Length: 309
Ligand SMILES: Cc1cc2nc3c(=O)[nH]c(=O)nc-3n(C[C@H](O)[C@H](O)[C@H](O)COP(=O)(O)OP(=O)(O)OC[C@H]3O[C@@H](n4cnc5c(N)ncnc54)[C@H](O)[C@@H]3O)c2cc1C
Ligand code: FES
Image (cartoon, rainbow, N blue to C red):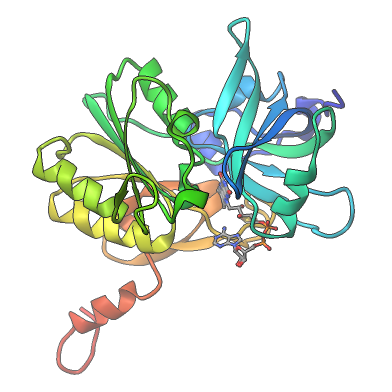
């Protein structure tokens, strides 16, 4: 319904070119379902047979949450899964926490209403051909992209997939059946122990490494808040394990025009460059990301004069 012809409104992105992905489009979809799965989390299913076949695991959409002027900016959401009708991709879902005006508008939307979105945006997962096993690490609403990623890995023939998922408490813990597809092993912890065991997701990852169930060469995908990224990066780094991180910077346009989503990335020569989350990512090698405060560590490695190393 109300679809804007893709050829007229196709928006080029750098990542689309690099990975040979289809360019995003700006269109309307019809809301088929908008259901609550925890006290703060909802899943919205959107009918969009034109956009759905273009979507790849790891990508996101930018949703217009109101036809009013405020909130002006669209809200980026990972593609939670692509839904099929008679074997053909016909729509997609987003999984979201209600935290502010945009997501409050989203959770008031009803079945049958139309919603404008731009997508698919960003790059897709890139899994090394030799990887035989995968570990997915999610913190909080970083659970959003996991199901699509796990399904894509299964479609590639991967059978040994483990999700390590950490949530704040029972109110924020997404049920396992919503978080991951059948056939994916799921380990859960919460900060307060109200669901499954008490602890942080890095505890689960450390145990996987200790038990040799996660080793260099395995594919690792991670999504969550910056403190979790930093802890996971440091832990995996000690064991020579790489990971692909789905970053979630504040965004404006979502397709490289407003320069509103910068993040820092370490280059092979050691220098640090700004990248745009929306078009250079949102997936980046975790070990290359430089977070707020990391530079201080570098400065401490410098000589006595305080010159950075
Ligand atoms: C690529 C990408 C994928 C995302 N995928 C999901 C998803 O699958 N599910 C989901 O629930 N959310 C996801 N997000 C975050 C989501 O876009 C924001 O939660 C949403 O825009 C908040 O809008 P709001 O108007 O409800 O709240 P706002 O009023 O915009 O924000 C409410 C509070 O959240 C903080 N906040 C908002 N956006 C961010 C952000 N990007 N990073 C850190 N803090 C933020 C604000 O500072 C404020 O304190 C994603 C973000 C990006 C960039
Ligand atoms: S959100 Fe506009 S450049 Fe990234």
